[in-house]
Length: 390
Image 1 (cartoon, rainbow, N blue to C red):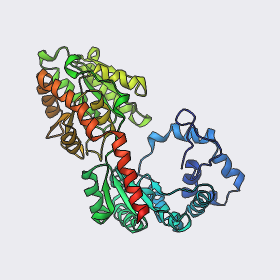
Image 2: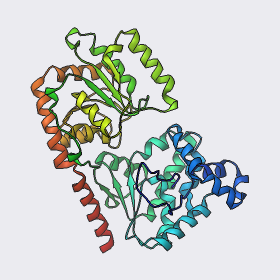
Image 3: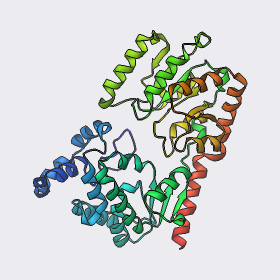
Image 4: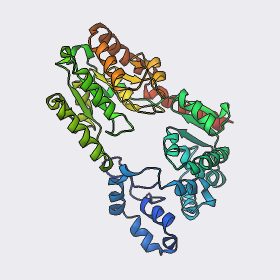
């Protein structure tokens, strides 16, 4: 949906069409004239070069301005994308023989009714951070979107939340019955990561996420400035990776100026490579990682990746962070999401080599025991089988 899978992402046959082409449905939603465009014009809009251009701009997508499209997508066959929905479901019914169809998020629940009617298989839906999208909308839209999501949830056999914390959030917001919501954690293959005990590495702090306001990058920068006021942390550097979009340029420029004003440029490394080997090199450079997301998150894959590399995480008491750290024992929680509290948490941990070493060992064992992708995928398969048996 929306964009093709490009060659560098997955090896996939080219005869699978793109449904709900990003450029096409955007134009058709905003300008009714495009809904009557000939098929050859739609084919151009769904061409790989044009969609690749759209993909390069995807980081700028946000909920504001897309409220009506979100509502229309949730309406399914009653929405403005009805023809595209029927085309996709007919293609699945003709070309695939699935046992289950698993929808990636609750904002796509408008697909479920047609899928059940035509493909006649159980439908499962994941839950992860949908509230971030809805809560960013104009207030007048928020209530009706949650009501629509509740209505469309009746076409789904089971929901899978990525944490107990977020399961509770969505049960309340979507008025979901307890028995329909299952918590299954995300997972990583710990064998893909190299363990180095954090106490044996330089005392560097790391940030691994998109560098923006929502993810609290400024909190990290200000915490680092606060930490460096104490001369006993003269050896500590800040290593930053995770990338950005055009929307973040001004924000990052201001933070770089702040770093310069405090004469900390030699102590801050903006690490450009955050995929593949670059990500592993980042983990070798840091002894703790923090991503102080302002409103918390439903999960946070960077926590698992850090801990699988033996890097303890230092997170605010928000979202699912306390749940993940309690489960793994691979980090610490601080109460208020402020630079001062984060700096204090860093200083306490960096000054306690014994605790740092123990948390590093616990981080790896915690991931193996509770967040192994083999265990979590097995949990999902068991849920699938129970739905098929019923």
